[in-house]
Image 1 (cartoon, helix red, strand yellow):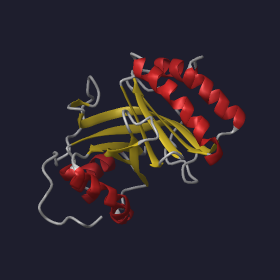
Image 2 (cartoon, rainbow, N blue to C red):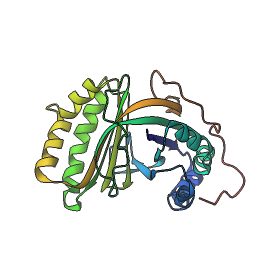
Image 3 (cartoon, one colour):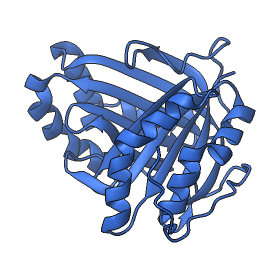
Image 4 (cartoon, rainbow, N blue to C red):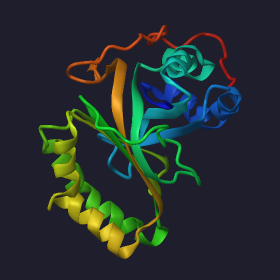
Length: 254
């Protein structure tokens, strides 16, 4: 079964932030050489929890798909890109995910398609949505976001949430973790700002392409905002490189 990982990194100070901006180009070279990877994307984030069009220069992410859970854990632990980013970051965390269902496309393919028919996950459920917003609809799309962010921020059920993206304003990814499917479904499909926005998107065709995927959470590691990523962390193999001050070597390669 393919395994996805979402790795988040927080970079403090101007030198570290300039370094990671350069990695948006340089890291691609090394990722193309990583034979275990089936799919990957480098993403920035918005301010706050990411659900805004204003860039957050301190928070960046690597989304990846691996052949199985063992390859995912080994890749996150050993891959030069992940190791370098952890060394430079003030803190980092990774979520390991097993696809349950996925529909739509991302860069012309569906990277999260499970090998077997969809099942019901026991325990935390992660949801990822990705969309390319039509330029002519971008303003209307972002006008909806503050209401959606406020509602998800008040929802007592959401365990974790972040907005990331490949291209500011136009290519957006939302990621959230819920205790189970029922609470997520109530938020997504109810008669609140999110449910109304989704209906408008469908009726008026705001996106050029989109993808919606659900995952079982296999494990988490690292810390985010000074605490474990989830209130009750699921055991995962620890990454060998913990955040530390920037190395003295040039570290210019991808």
